[in-house]
Image (cartoon, protein in one colour):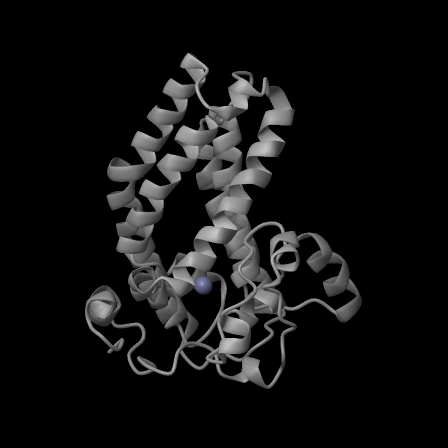
Length: 265
Ligand SMILES: [Zn+2]
């Protein structure tokens, strides 16, 4: 795969910046929900959080993960090698398998109390737009990075298989957090394959019916397969976020401390 004039990190950066700019522009033209907080404020707070997380994660998780993937590929270790997968076949299977792992990891983040303490920082946002995709506590990213190392050790993806999965997760997360909506006929087609902005916005409701459901990131099949799909409801979607911490949800201090207090803020 060395013919690609890209490095894995560059691919992820392109996906991150490209989809972020595209979805930010689209939600400026066709916003689904009205913003109650100025957009520049949301963008600046969430961007600073994301830059700090990226710097922290770069040396602790991202680089070790790439080195580990490279080592496993050179040594031909992991189930993908045992099965004789290579080329685009391996890339497609890696994308689907890691998206399946990601579905269960997200679901676990809602059910394990310790993980929920960190993941709720993402859900404390009282709005859903593309900047919500940048809002994660560093603790959640560190824990999920360590867990991802076990996926890599088990499967042994190629560098490009892993890079395309990482770029896919980044781009699709920005896509389905964006404040847009499709007409019903288009929504039906897109949601048959992928998580859509409408279904994912329903995962951000105060209402537990849809919040503890609709966990998929790239492919929507997992929610249907494992009975966690719930049809979005317009009334429930009027209240986004959590019951607690609705004031000052953009305060850095509160975002950083939220996992360490019993009731968020
Ligand atoms: Zn969630």
